Amino acid sequence: MQQKANREPVLSVQNLCFSYDQKPVLENLNLEVFESEIFCILGSSGCGKSTLLRILAGLTKPSKGQVKFAKPDCKVGFVFQNYALFPHLTVFENIAYGLLESNKEKTKQRVDELAAQFEISELLSKYPSEVSGGQAQRISIARSLAPKPDLLLMDEPFSNLDAKQKSKLKPELLQKLRLANVPTILVTHDQEEAFDIGDRIAVMNEGKFVQVGPTYDIYHEPKCRFAAEFIGTGAFIDAAPSHDGKNIQTALGEIPMPKGCGATSNRKPVELFVRPEDLVHDDDSPDCLEASVVSRQFRGAHSIFRLRLVSGEEVYSLAPSHHLHKPGDKFKVRVELDHVLLFPKNH
Image (cartoon, rainbow, N blue to C red; front, side):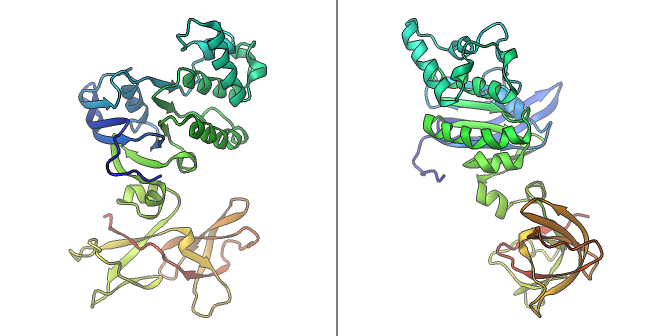
């Protein structure tokens, strides 16, 4: 989802910091969220994601920085990780909880509308203890959307669901958020979840955003080693510029030097980051490189092979799952690097 330069953000965060017992938890965070956008904050446990969400919800006060909403009376909805449904209230009463309508007919109309959208109409008279995890999450989201918030915050909304429930609820939720047209911030540690749902992603590490951008850029054009390693699967191999500076020499052969590459300008050691889809399995072409299989990860429709090159370095290759190569087998690959990613070498 592309944002227009002149578009006003619904939410703006500037130089946000938070410390706990003098230990920095969040450091100089900046972000903007726009109308209708689903913005995902992706990071491992303990990186500060939930703390940031609590600050945006007004539940925690920042140590420094500003949180600005486009509307002075901005209504913020919050979907908690553990659903946080009121156990003594029925499903109907939970969804209606945030509605201030004194008109019972309008309240019922809004609850019935959301219940139909989330396919929980038959649960309205039940209590939270009588519903499944997936149903509880639908109820929680419906309750948050009931007052028609200007911004929706979601904290790990699928973490308590099994794989089957997740696969069903994720596309349904995305469709409903699009229909509701509510800008949303979702925090998650699950990369697949962030890429399935987010228009843009902020990759977070140790209280900082290391990269913010559209999902395509985050995956194909990581700006730092952490973002490259954290997202998806890949491997670093040694690389060095050729004498004329036009190519990069690696164990995969010579690769054209990308334009404007600054990673090799100071002549310090660099590494090439290679993803599984960059190495196409091909046993027939005479120009292919030969490697040996170290291991195989079966993923259903495809497998990811871990390979050892002649140099001793290891890389990954994506192949259809009917390829049944075993550890020790020879495996030929054709190099197809659409994105040449060079990073300073770690020592």
